[in-house]
Amino acid sequence: MDSRYDRFSDGCAMTSDVDVAIIGGGAAGVATAIFAARLMPSRTVVVFDGAAKLGAKILVSGGGRCNVTNRVVTPSDFSGGNPNIIKRVLAALPVDRTVAFFQGIGVELCEEEHGKLFPKTNRARTVLEALLREATRLGVRTFLEHRVVSIRRDETAFHVATDATTVSADNVVLATGGRSLPKTGSDGSGYRLAEALGHTLVPLTPALVALVLDGEFHQPLSGVSHDVELTVEAAGMKPVRVRGVLLWTHFGISGPATLDVSRHWHRARLEHGDVAVFANLIGGKDVTTLDGELLDIASAKPRIQLSNALAQLFPARLADAMLAELQVSGTTAMAHLSKDVRLKIVKALVRWPLPVLDSRGYAHAEVTAGGIPFTEVHARTLGSKICPGLYLPGEILDVDGRIGGFNFQWAWASAWVVATALARATKTE
Ligand SMILES: Cc1cc2nc3c(=O)[nH]c(=O)nc-3n(C[C@H](O)[C@H](O)[C@H](O)COP(=O)(O)OP(=O)(O)OC[C@H]3O[C@@H](n4cnc5c(N)ncnc54)[C@H](O)[C@@H]3O)c2cc1C
Image (cartoon, rainbow, N blue to C red):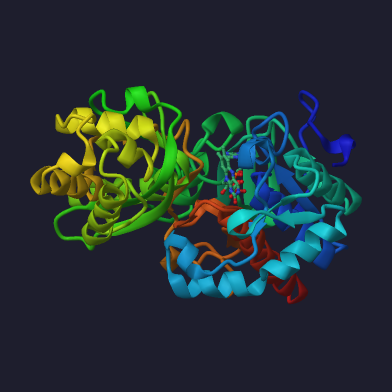
């Protein structure tokens, strides 16, 4: 972006008014800046960010490859919030227009399994550099190392204060994200800024985060991954089921299924107290199907040992650990396996208790669940009902997507909604 404005020099405070002050230059903030500058070329759009460089989170996203969006995005890919508003926002910038937008700024996307779209270069840096190049081309000014500490509104304008300066702005976009990965600058201070302007907060929890298990069962399994179905249960709530790949680690469990289920574990604990998590260790097969498969193996290969029979269905290391935990000998020939023991194994496999102690917390979470409630924003604009002229795109709102590019799609689509609303609002000013 425009290097003349990269930093304020000591003691040289900018006092001039701007049309739009965007707080936070993450995915939602930079996209809002680009869309707003395109729609309102004569207006001044500035971005403030507390970090020394923009886009730290984009750079680490998708394992450094940035899962920009997904081929199919629907409201059911999101939790929290209000499904009708989420639907409306997603419809405002459908995936094909997101793909065209990125193509237009020089980022070709290609599809991988489960519809995930990544840059063809396989580098998140391609995405970040293209966004920043486009913002610069459009004359967006950015102020790095300018953490906003307060926003005040009077009858004339907003007054956005950093430690170095105060800027007055006609409109403010609060795109400060959530609390996840605070070392990237998303430390949750935006929630305080919103609260100071009159907003409330749906309680926050980490989401898309690995889970820490009690006991030692998981330890020898570190590195093993396989299909599972995870179920979160608590008194007074409908069980939540998530299917996908689970990765065992030295601290507990990770992998896409765990990350997707983690928000449900956190929310259940927050709202219902005691929570239990069970894993169907063979990808959701029921007792009858699994028992049938074991009987088929026994009749085809009566002399095969139990541990080897189970290893035909899921990883051998997991079979051995599971048999040890159940105190069943793995050397028994299938022909000699009693019905009781067979059923004991099958029942354990479809409902294996996972002693979840906690998640790994915000330091490791990809997103934050909870946030500013949708009841406090206008569905059409994501503008505040409480503080006119304030807009709230991105993760700061009470919405979180599952793994697969959905959170970035929310950032792009909500940025588009806010930018078009700003363009309409400034036309009538
Ligand atoms: C490790 C990891 C991997 C991920 N991978 C993917 C992926 O591949 N695909 C996907 O869809 N999603 C992914 N996500 C989630 C995605 O990155 C976020 O949902 C998205 O970045 C949210 O965008 P945002 O702009 O709302 O907030 P953020 O990206 O968090 O940006 C907020 C910005 O505001 C700034 N800020 C905060 N407070 C202040 C303040 N007081 N003053 C000034 N500036 C402030 C911060 O410095 C930051 O730059 C990943 C997240 C993580 C942590």
